[in-house]
Image (cartoon, rainbow, N blue to C red; front, side):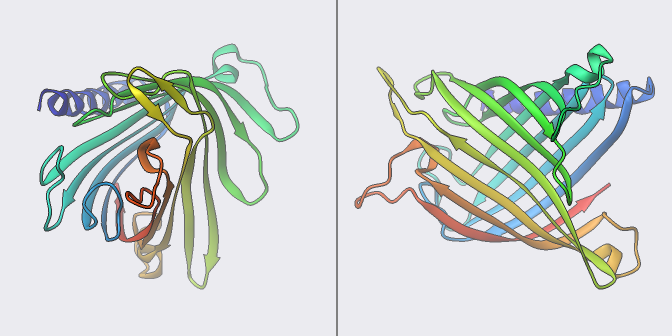
Amino acid sequence: MKRTFTSLMLAGSLFAASHAMADDGIFQWQSYSLTYLNGQNFKVNPPNQQTVTFEYADSWKYGDNFLFVDNIFYNGKPDSDVGANTLYGEYSPRLSLAKISGHDFNFGPIKDVLLAGTYEFGEGDVESWLIGPGLDLKIPGFDYFQLNFYNRHSRGDRPGDNIWQITPVWSYTIPVGNSDILIDGYIDWVTQSDSNSRGTYHKNVHVNPQVKYDLGKALHMTPQKLYVGFEYDYWKDKYGIESTSDFDTNQNTASLLVKVFW
């Protein structure tokens, strides 16, 4: 519970700080959203899950920030470690060399070079820090495309030092009739495993896109405010746990989605 309280305090502090800095006019843009997900066939944790996700993103004077906090409800069967529901979140700040230095880093497909970080937090043994270089890329058709390279460091009994992770993040919009379909998401590809006194963390890959229809625009409301669709979740060797015939950790499922921005 102490870690849960700390997680909520972090989210609240970032939320308050963003409003304070917005008053100083140092943000290019800010975004807030709530997402509801309902899915089945999850692995490792109980199979039936509902999730409510708060997300915040911005672009500011020296870089950008992204924060999400999941409140996950396990339907019908509690999780053996955290009970009937749990909190999990990630805070991902990046510092832009172009913004800080005032120099143009455009070269070929590269728009900018950044210092990227992520803090993973929540209930249970999930706390990790990631840091490394990031790139903003110019890829035709994409709203944005980021490519971040992280070195992972974990706390507590969870193995995970000397591990590298590659994380592309993207957004792509497809016009359909009088509205749009938005395809965005990320891939976490852990390319190196680690074995030490705390155990073994196996190579794994997590593919997590969302396919969303702009229902608000289709109903002649404000566009980019109300979406419906689904989230696909493929995770080979989930949590770095090697899948075996006795314990399947290869997750392949989808969840219905409703997302609201303000």
